[in-house]
Image (tube, protein in one colour):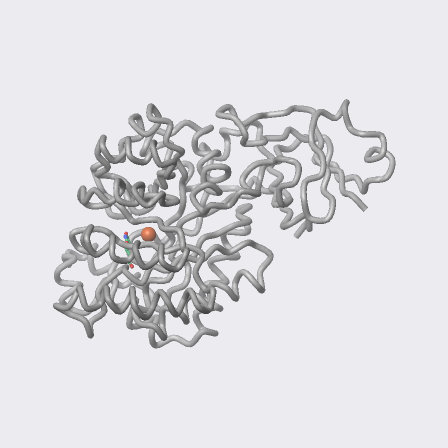
Amino acid sequence: MPTLIHNVTLATMTKADLGLIPNAALAIENGVISWLGSAENIPLELAQNAQKVNGNGGLLTPGLIDCHTHLVWGGSRAHEFKQRLHGASYADIAAAGGGILSTVTATRAASEHELFEQAKSRADALMAQGVTHIEIKSGYGLSVEHELKQLRVARRLGAELPLCVHTTLLAAHALPPEYKGRTDAYIDLVCNEILPAAAAEKLADAVDVFCENVGFSRAQTEKVFQAAKAHGLPVKLHAEQLSNQNGAALVAQYQGLSADHLEYLSEQGVAAMAQAGTVAVLLPGAFYFLRETQLPPVAQLRAAKVPMAIATDANPGTSPFTHLPLMMHMACTLFRLTPEEAWLGVTAHAAKALGVANSGTLAVGNRADLALWKLNAAEDICYEIGANPLRQRWFAGVAT
Ligand code: DI6
Ligand code: FE
């Protein structure tokens, strides 16, 4: 039996103004959207036979999509947060074995089950805010065994929770201690062993690299991109977060799905992304937590019509946040996105950053991943952070 959600305003996310349809309804059949439009145009068949759900005047949107997370990690870096506030420097913390490698140590020591339980609670927090799709990267294993362990945990989250999980291999996230001083040798391990093993087990939907002066060089990044291409995997990139490595132009050259962070993105990078259709994924949580001052060039991205997405970048070191509406608020407050851009950034543009065609908008045939909100206006979600305005959510048409 079809379900008809009525007495709602639809935000289809198919236009810059969100494609609002007041006094509207939407029908679900077999897990997909089968009809949507003004209530006055509801087909008689639906009006007579569908199971009715009264939306009580709420705003019905696509489910939110968090298109950049490192959700599977072991351990915690809260103590480093405290040390830094007591005056320790990054160098002090790194010298004491802290930083990203301390998360690598903790992730390697954790079992798949432990990692699953910890990541599940983070995923539950995101789902409680209307998130129906998340991307999860590896990048804290840094070996065949432990990178695949992270990705298997991500796949299990997608299998056991109602939300959709898209996985990304980020083995080129940091240099493991056993490869200290041998970066090129580690990149060979990534290209010749880790990536092929992940591809063979179908554990990765995309491949990512941390292209940065404290990460991997443009040349090393390109080697990983070549390996990804050889295995038919799309690419995305942590690009221009702390400096301009011309990473965005490189991922655009490979028709990459997205370039992420982008605080130091150049005009050439903007042009290359616009040309390639590569999505700009903005990560205000990391900018805020690191107390950065260099803003991403939002005005240039807007003028070049580069789609902008927004994500949590949930990770223990630089963005310990599993709250996507807060990221929408920060994208507006810190990066000056409009509320409409923020909504598109966690729906249609986030879907594009994951290469997902049938989600992120309300359209006939799309998966019925939906969120119903009690909001006076769409912009309220980016303005007021506190009480959760989510009233109902549907995962592939099932109200949960
Ligand atoms: N950029 C970041 O901000 C995180 N990774 C990356 O490529 C940092 C991850 C961590 O510190 O655990
Ligand atoms: Fe990240």
